Length: 405
Image 1: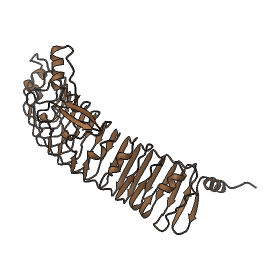
Image 2: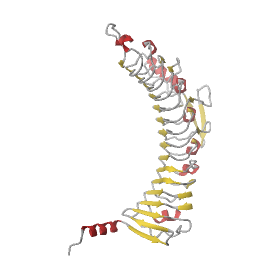
Image 3: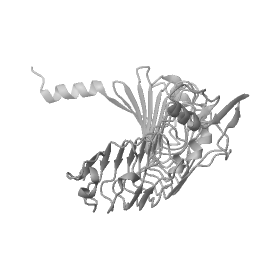
């Protein structure tokens, strides 16, 4: 007798996933091909024996748990999953043991007050999305191979880089929280491997870039969608000549290579390299769209010697005015569209190649106020009559940047 297709499908699904109720109604257990899901775990049903978990488990999931302390010591001693997920749950604290083999931990859509880690050399990626976490646990410093620290749409209100003093993190993603303040202990060197810093969608009103000056591998800072109206640069050594930091018995010296780069450019030959680490040594881009800037002090970026892109789109800027000797020397792209800019003086930028001023309030523009090396200028949707620009007037033979109006 032929077996109906619906029966074949039922048999196939049954072989893929088995649901067992253990100690009902305390929790249930769903076994998939490579995943194991513990459902509805409560304080009364927290098992000491996780022998029902098998070595084939690659992903361990806790769904809809309601428990004070979720101690993962026992389950992670029985199996070696590469990923641990806790979702739709409400716990006070999660304890991750040193013996944990998982390289990824993901907390999502859950209430949790704290997470605690022991020294671990396996976890590389910790993520928390839509949680009630209010602080980054200082125990993340015990994660000796952590590469990604990702906490989004949670309840963080302050963040101190001190918790990452010895951390190998290369990506710090703290988007969509409620962060109002970012700090670091003066002179502390942290984040030696940090390359990307995401702080978009928070509640920052002011920021001191001095907190990031000693992060020698940092390449990108993203600050979109905050409330920033002011940025500063404060360093312990106000002369910006050098700063020595002691850590674990080592002495590390920081200074600005600005003079070195300028001399190298002017003399067109090798110049003795400073015997120190440059502030913001590898920083290439700073993104600050959708904030509340009315004015910007380009001097704040003057020690960012390798900065080549600055994004100030969709702010409230009224002017773009740079001061001689107080600009980043290698900035080549400036994005300032969708503002209220009427006054422009950017001549001091020695390496500027492209300026985007789409949708502003520029009525007049003296080309001598623009950088001499400028190749591209976007003036679309401004009240300016571009025919008044010498290089745009066919009757005047003048050179100038490629201009869109």
